[in-house]
Amino acid sequence: MEFLKKYFQIEARGSSISAEIIGGIVTFLAMVYILPVNSFMLADAGMSQPGVFVATALAAGFATILMGFLGKVPIALASGMGINAFFTYTVVLGLGFKWQEALAAVLVSGVLFLIVSLTGLRKLIINAIPRDLKFAIGAGIGFFIAFIGLKNAGIIVSDPATFVALGNLANPVVLLGLVGIFLVLILFTAGGKLSRFAIIISMLAVGIGGALLGLIFPGLEPFMPNLTTANLGAVSEVGGLFGQAFGALGSLLSNPLAYPVIVTLLFIDFFDTAGTLVSVGHQAGLLDKEGQLIGNDQALLVDSVGTMFGAIVGTSTVTSYIESNTGIQAGAKTGLSAVVTGVLFLLSILLYPLFGFVDAVFVDGVAYSPATSLALVFVGILMMKPLKDINFEDPIILASSFITVIMMILTFKISEGIAFGFITYALLMALSPRRKEVHWMVYGLGAFFLVHLLIYFIWIA
Image (cartoon, rainbow, N blue to C red; front, side):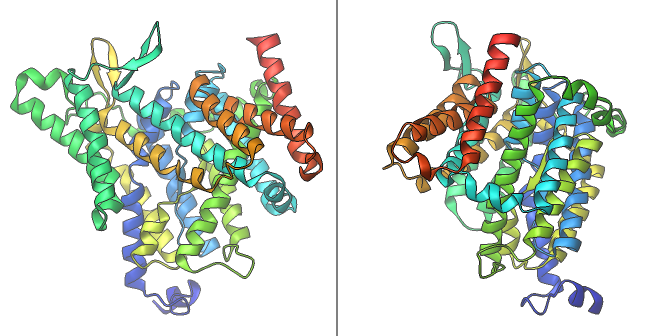
């Protein structure tokens, strides 16, 4: 015990071993939803769902334990929401990359993140990119994944005349998904301790509650989740994902479209992590005089290593989680809580057979995911908060922010939203009297994304 107190500076930070253990458990409960949500999302890319479940748990456990021991801060990591949507719906289903190549892109982005973290490039990049554009990208990703959630729930459907339309709310499984979304919002807005676990409580209520309805009312059974695990597959399928990223490096790097993909993966992970570290550090009282998290360099290093490890075992980009704040509110102040959270992620692999209730429901050949859709919509709602910090009085910021958000949703591609946002901002600033206010890197990124669009639409699409 004395070793733990000294190594993690528990008493120096005004904490205790019991508080750290409780904080670690609370953080895990706030984040555990990512295991089924990420596995089913990457399954849409053709990957093994149980394999991704295990890979996500392994990557989260490894990276979070490493954060605890090396960074010594109460921050947990796992495959990031939003960036997993980019992996599946943009890189694989949109641009046509194989999932093995997408994993290779994650691996390369992790290596680049490591280089950025170890050099002066980190400060250069953070200072170069306009603050408002970072906020717009984060909010746009939130809208994007919320749209996916509404689509997967069947609440929003395609329409030949209007492109999208309201789904059939008389369909019991669609109605169940709608109830789940309202339930998570009710729990969240009610405040108190329940709001911290709004996602996992709502997923349990929708999945298990729906399965029970199917048992009580046989006519509803085809429309409801079930408690069986017959269709889930075995956790041993993670072996088919392990190391696939290495074999796909050659084909990935020979494709010109790979480079914008890698840059986008790096960009999203880098700024998502930087923002999360500051937010969590503020909550825990661990910011230095410059407003940076104590142990910031080690935290960025762990994030990059976690991404590389995740790509190797078979999951999307690993990043720091804002849900770490829930553990901090419960008393966590040191890396010991992160170690506890990481160990729980590893142990969660043993609980995989209990997740049958979150499996997709197939009705007339259409897949509905009421239990996981609510998580996507809820996280999307939370991600729109940065909009309030954007300077909408600036016409260039207003225009480029709007283009960023709207293009992400309407093109169904995060990368296209980022590309059009950068191009719009760089072009408008270059043509204005304020052109010298912009760092050369912004113009460089604008030109880079323009070339990306030209390559795709002229030579490939």
